Amino acid sequence: MPESRAVAVVEPPPARRGWRERCVGLWREGLRSRLLRNIATVITGTAGAQAVTMAFMPVITRLYGPEAYGILGTFLSLSMTLVPVAALTYPIAIVLQRRDSEARALVRLSILLALGVAVLMSLVLLGFGERIAHALGIGVVAPYLLLLPWVMFCGALLEISQQWLFRQQRFRLTASMAALHSLLFNSLRSIAGLLNPSALVLVTTSALNQALHAALLGLGMFRRHADAPRAAPETAPSMVQMARRHRDFPLFRAPQVLINGFSQHLPTLVLAAFFGPVVAGFFALCKQALGMPTNLVGKSVGDVYYPRLSAAIHAREPVTGLLLKGVGGLALVGLVPFSLVFCFGPPLFAWIFGPQWRVAGEFASYLALAEYTIFLSRPCVVAVPALSLQGQFLIFEVVSTSLRILALLSGAVLLGEALITVQAFAAASIAIYLSLVAWVLVASARWYRRLGGDER
Image 1 (cartoon, rainbow, N blue to C red):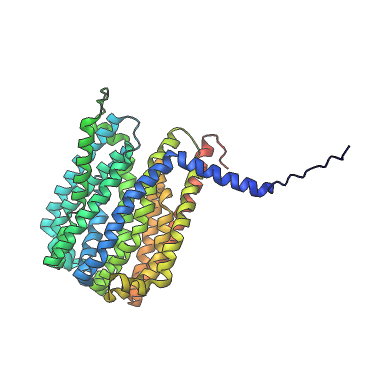
Image 2 (image 1 turned 90 degrees about the horizontal axis):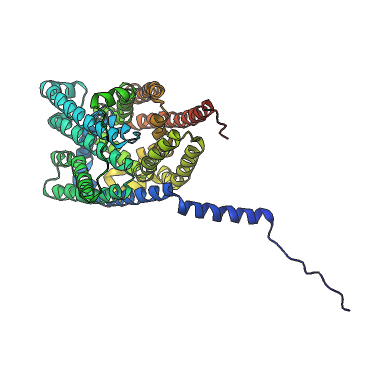
């Protein structure tokens, strides 16, 4: 009988086969993940909006020039500092509610507070606005100060609408309206600039930005709400009850947001006061251009992570791993674009926005590093209210703002150099946001251990 021969079966190395299996498993899990689909939806809408804005920016920068852009940047620094606290940050709590009746009570409370704050701000500016502007060295924006209450109220309405839609998981509506808003708003600014390229036109059209966005979201909500089935009526708590239940937001979150906004926009104000509107315009363009990746991916991820983290915390699930995945993923996504700006800032800005903006590219080379740390910290920032870290975050914000002020004054007052001032601000921001990421990760692990879990 012929000898039987054993046939050797060659198998792939176990490690390699395991790596392939893990990759396929992660891909299939990602396709099934509702969280990742929601993130992709928000990113798609935000990407469309940012693509439209980026396409219009070279036109707008050539129409208006650095001085008009500097006046706009100074005005926006004031408005963007005040807008998040127009409703005392109560809109942030809308996502956290278990019942829709509670969320609706917070919506009504937020609108009423925003209206009252806008009226109070109008009275203050009518009496003292011009004197305040000249005392701060930013008299160039004195003619536009009465637009601030309008921008604050519309900004609060926009925040309320967005938080309600995030709560309802209606990410497609927010994504589509973001793209449509960007197209309409930038078209308005460009057409107005062709007719009269002045700071007055640039500021007044920009004051309509949040009003237009809020109106589009409102139209989308009411149109969909008319077709939705009516839910069973719930016992609605009063606005006073909700205000008391979430008093940590006005007590801790609102001061923190105000301080953070002040510290973020202080450089534009300092540069305008010490070096004039042209230098402030360079910095304003840098912040807008470099903030696009943060708005495109970082904010989208944060908007989706916030309800996901809230649900995980309500269910007493570990969240440190979820935060680490978000931070690590954003660090990889942002590495290439921010590195390109760091290495080639001046020629990039001169080519995209025009030769007169080359100095802005020098600023951008250093601000890119700071914006990168802001970008990757988004999941940790949105975890703060979900983990009830408002009080500690307020202390953190006071310390970090003091560090930014010290850096800015060292460059502007002691050394008198605009570029050194920007470098000092960038270094302070890097240290602040890396510390923030480490602190929130440690706090999330401690929170789960207090529940009796072992998060590894």
